[in-house]
Image (cartoon, rainbow, N blue to C red; front, side, top):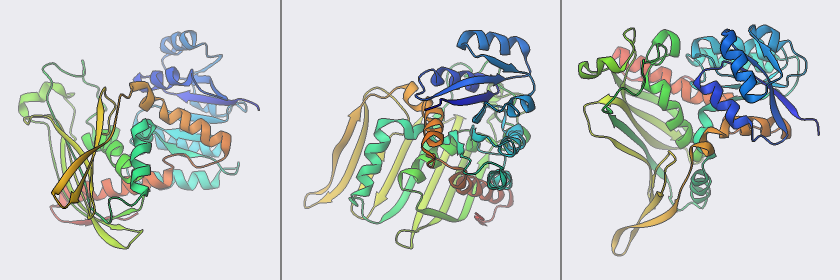
Length: 362
């Protein structure tokens, strides 16, 4: 079969990561790259032996040999580029956050539908943590029905500030509403929510949100770019419907960075027959636990233990994208699913701004 040719637009940290992971693609290859910085463009082309280079993204999109593109530029630029890519008949993989807001995701979906080439793939990199082996273990276990009716899905990932600045200098886009759509919710929330909702087969339908967001604390002002205006801490209560049973499920979500709290991380699914205690990220000696009722009270059983790597999760998006193109099948996180998450995020920001509960409009 003819190899799938991919183009990558944006050669920052994430773009370089995609190129590293693309070296192990099966039946696909990155043959074109684009960046406005000519020195970075040429150095990257030499490092990864990329034959075609462009400083103008429109020229890359016009290249008839390119089957799909990976968009690794800042969020505020990606939707317009994604619309152009679909119009040029390309498959599209966009970095996370999927877009600045749900309206932009709808623009991408409309462009995908209107593409002159049929069955164009539209996917988001928020699927990264589904690439870890433990994710399949969890998904298969949930499918057995051992948790019973899901009652609560819970994520709490509050991180203490590290002793030294994690970014030096802090990137301008990371906590800017006009460049990234928001702060920690957009940066990490798409991973958390894609992971939990995806493991449950996307059967949770968010209905209404009550939320609060908080800015960076004064003690860690230097950890963020001086122009930052987005949140470093978010707390949300989301009322959902489980579409498999038409019963209510509560999704409680908290994410924080550069906080005054000790680090505390948990990803949890609580059902009426048992509870899963998860760990989303890769790490050595990772463990997943199943808590369940017995005649001796609630007991905890080790469900899975193993070591997962950085490459396994970071290689997931581009490998999954190439697979979907090659097979003509759905990617792990298509744009339609990303719209669910982004619509919920829009409601979270609206609730935090108004102080009132807000309906999720998918």
